[in-house]
Length: 132
Image (cartoon, rainbow, N blue to C red; front, side):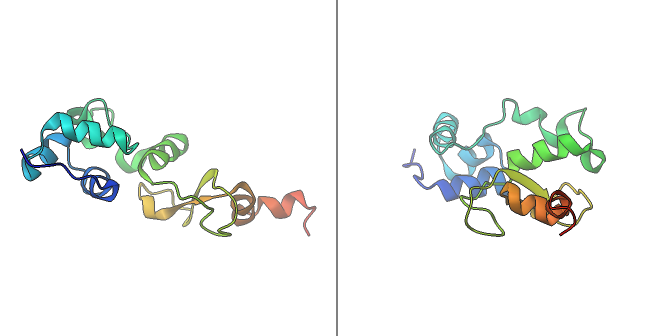
């Protein structure tokens, strides 16, 4: 068994972006399955309880027909949170905001925003200021 990667980006790429299971990663790179689980935990990467019953493999999976709240929960789980708002780059992001208004299951169609920028982009900030 060779020494396992100590690189968070490696595990984000393999597990989150490429959606490989821990077993697939362990076989491909020659690490033990337990070692992969421990690295994911060490780097704070959310590990699914049952990879064999996740997403499309789950009988309850709705794909693109997912509801508003469930889509936001899914995006929060899969889109890495930046340290700062993706618009103003000043405040800490709180909200996940849809960019296109189409609410697709696409993490690139969402951005992490602070509350102020989220309200501005939705037009709600203008309404609070009395239309100014």
